Length: 484
Length: 141
Image (cartoon, rainbow over all chains, first blue to last red; front, side, top):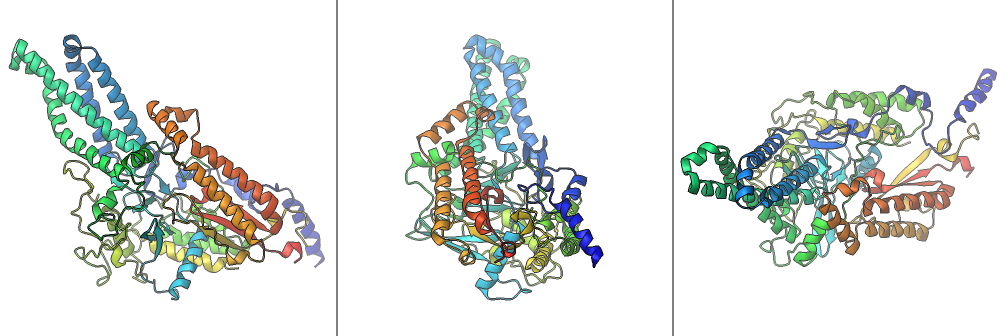
């Protein structure tokens, strides 16, 4: 007994050295051993980061490089082969204007591709647990069997909008937000995932995307027109065949521009319509706000007139990024659970033992999860589940998409499809995640009018990582332990 | 007892956390529900709490306001190919700083003395206002 009493004051002296402003309990020596990591390194989504977190793109960037090459090569050829003739024969303003357009196109392209589209950070374990409790109370069911789809209804400007619960991010999605299965993130005001740009298009980069396609339309038309002019003028002087011999690049430029013009100009027109009516690509395709659905159906987000809608979309305030990718991972702040397949289970068992030792702060768990879950978890390990749909009767077949009540988050294709499939791969099928609303939909719908434009093809089904079930289990484990 | 040397934040264990969710009845603008959570009934005055949330809502509304100044900023940014934001911070960011200060102030003056702590919503992705309730053990109640 005496020993203990003597020991305690000594321990107290160690504690008192902690500064009053920080809220980290006893982990100071622990902290020193772990190097500071930036939040992008622990980011749970499927994004790629460059330049130490400054640049953020989707995982598949091949098509983006194609876009870049097409633009650079076509413009380069234009400046090299056509501009000298045109500037001499007509006016030197042509290369200047072309140059300005070119710079603007590249600028907006990079801005669209490299910025955060409006990713919603995943819920912290505390929040997720709180939501689960609320939902369980609301549904009156006990744990073990997952209740049917979790939705919340809210009335916005007179229209009833359903908010869906995202199983991956563990949040109720805000209106107009959607989960992109390619990037595995919930994105605010989700428009679509654009492979040409290598990123999702959402609230924060929609204006850049629009400016990009608009300026690219002008550039394409500009180049097309002036290359034709060049060829015609030259042919008058030197003959057609000689022209082709002197300037062979012109043919390539005409071909590229000809095919691009239709799709890009079409896309610009489509997005101009969307902006003026304040809709997303998603909503337009599903006809969420179309009057065909019902007499009283209108868009609750529209400001009423075209001018205000345009201004709001293009010149409104630019919201900041919510994911703070270059910030440092704070060991005392809760981090969302990273999708690390098998490692998550390991992490949670570790955390349980740590829990016993540490003070009952839920915040200490995610630290362990994050650290142990780093890196290997990012690539899917294939988990305990097989690739195919293991649950025979559960998934509703692709053709029966009961889509669509006024559920504005029910995406017709890319997003929920892979998401829904992934949800199938649970451990032994205990959690029936798939709901009729999350059933895979027929992949026949394209979000825009032009066939050549954005190909929102499903980029293959991603590895059926059993992330969600493991999330669920680890969250439940944490909840049980944290309910002190 | 053994932790008399420490600040309340270290010694007090967290009893519970309350999450004030977003209020979407006005669309996608950032607003939080002003409904007073029952867990806080014993700790703080209802009016006080609602006042805090209302002020927060007003601040966020100010950040997202569409008006002459925001349009001007948007157009100027577009003309400079958005490079202007390398040296200047956006209106939204300025208001976020104001909000951070406001929350700090509220915590220091009103919430900490009652054993509560507000977390800035931006740290939770603008999803919730997290109110941490600390146990009253250290205060002898």
